[in-house]
Image (cartoon, rainbow, N blue to C red):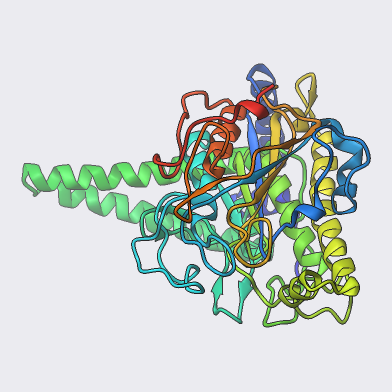
Length: 455
């Protein structure tokens, strides 16, 4: 596999001299130092359920963390776990499906197991935040997921609105190339980009000639077309400058970048997604990243880094729910691995200087499990884990236990003490500086930010 640094790729592909790149980098760094650092968020979605036994702690400041959360112990002062929240929509046997992050009902008829195949009912939290926080970035949000052959789809709850799924990128190498430049030999890249530029130049010239013989309406349409070309070229230049302003990043070292069949998660595939998310944030390519570990359904995938013989997290949850100690230990190990990757990401954010502090000062990591608090029908006991406190508004460093939702006629009814998960999403948005956000998802269930979680 060819390995190119991002700087090498840009210089070769665009015909830029090293002097130009270095000059651009110095200028952009100087400009960045004069600006307020942006707020950033990384959302991690997972499936199969996050049971209360795996995170419960005495309400208040942290003492000894539950073993599942133990990788986050060095950062306990910025760790917040709040539960339980309910999510009333698209409730199936294995979670809320698309409603995990949108908290909106699908327009299609729901059955207990089809909530991952019906269309989404609204915009997801990651895409909403991306559109609000993505101005000036190359991508408003970066969504990385895994393809699952069991369901023949990508189990990722990102959506742009009603019946508008947002596809996750499942090939990390392609996602890297989209952000930092195409992976190829320098001479090939240079020739390809030069050819594209010649085509664009000819198009502009030809359009200019044609324009002279057209009426006013047609000229207006062509003007809009030329404007779109100008915007495309400006976007490419902007992406080039942004990429040039950060240090070298060679991209993920993966021979097989996708998850196939039931083979399961492997350490290098999961780590590559967290590292790419970090680099995209660090280089200003985006302010919002979403890493989906089958984050909208219960997939029969094994975690090979936990046990070489492990074949199904789904089955392990069934065994743990029945009291099988071996399966309970496997579930603990899976969560230790997942939160270990969060800790790895956080350590990289802490090591990256920004202003008078580090990137960690301006970043929030959020963990949500699509199945809620248990493997089957846990949608009334969601926990939300956050790491960071970018605006200082969160009551970080503690476990917050909320009153359990109550039902009327078998349906959870919102009250001042019983919170929908959308209330937490509003709290998160405001913690990222979006003070104007006072509601999210279904307005019949969203009451606004959660008082017990606000510092």
